[in-house]
Image (cartoon, rainbow, N blue to C red; front, side, top):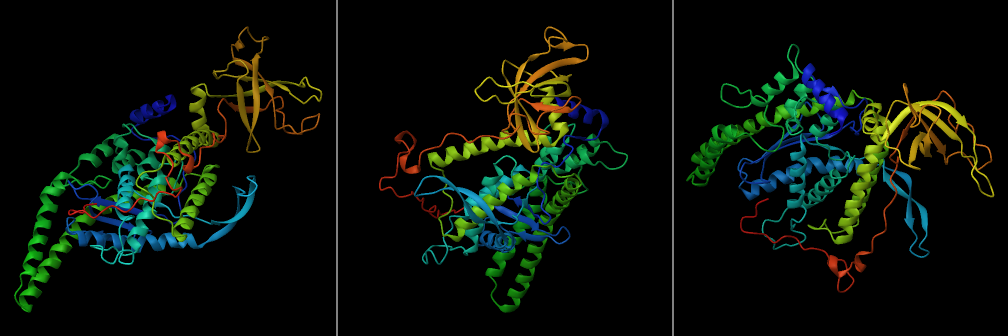
Length: 541
């Protein structure tokens, strides 16, 4: 945690209200997101109990599994979920625009630009907390290998074709959520905690109700009091007034309400199966319907508060202006979405359970690169984030006090002006350290020369330090620098010790050339495609 984040949390504790951790919104929020509030069964990991899902805040779709241990009811839940999510995805998969992409020519081996289709927008699936993302990943893992009747007519419990398709999409969304800065599958608690600092721990911030209580507490109540009430307050039945914003349920709800309702449902099903005539069957069917309605009401009572809280968070985020680099990161999400759409359309097999060595290394390198790029872009877009980097000695801001024209010592001298910047910051500068400033959206590089000896021996004065920099690039190819490319006396500038964009790492070998220490190449040169999981007797998710 940075110093400025710690100060913001301390101020939140002092004032009783969350403090801004950003002045702009650093994540994309769709105009029409799909909100997904799942609920799982205690003691059976991944078994869905129900969910609220939809794009309209006033008209959510309630999905319920009255008996999660029943395989058929779970499959019906997944099929109904696919009927909602897949049409939403297809809406964005249809609209495309022309875009250029750099690819390697297979004949010449050179990098060339080709024109391809890029989806003009991408879907966004919002879940309440990080646990919701893990549940989406688990659902995708359990669905994408399901056998359909078309694939295997003799498969037991064949799934509708849309179920494994949804599993592939959910897996892609969950994998993309691991990429820093991605907005295809965000968690509302992480979105809010990125833009506001509360007076509680980051673990407590995973409770959406408590987090919102700090950000927007009721009138006459502090954030700490409202958060405590959101976490602990119970009604006359002993149930939490604000259910936890995640798939897990409260034990008091499970023991006192849900378990008796499921037991009643099971008895009604058994009695219906044992009915001996039509009149008795009608009576038993009515009892079964009443029991199912009771479970639906219980599931809705646990998910509706979280549903409303997610939309409340969306409103808070939309009130912030969007940061400059958000559109670029969303474009990368669109490329990811388009690529997966093309793979599905081409009939490629589902994602494997485990990546090969090269794919895993590429994913890890990409995530590290995106993390560094995200941190740099957030600092460039937001002065509050940049203040944290300045406190850490990774950037400095000041006024240009002098500019001296100089040239490189070469056969064709190039301009290398010396710029003196007076600053109150204390950056960690060493000999010939590179620093960067944003010039027309692109980084301009300078080199640390030293401190101005006219101020003090180490550049320290009563009003700051005077740092001398040598500008190295972005000045044109002429003997004289282009207008505006060199700072002028009196300009207020901000330099960073970190690069504004990340370079690509070393290339990795093709999967066919993977060394034996990392699994070895395929014996016949063909790609390894894992077969779907065998169906077990229990067949739990």
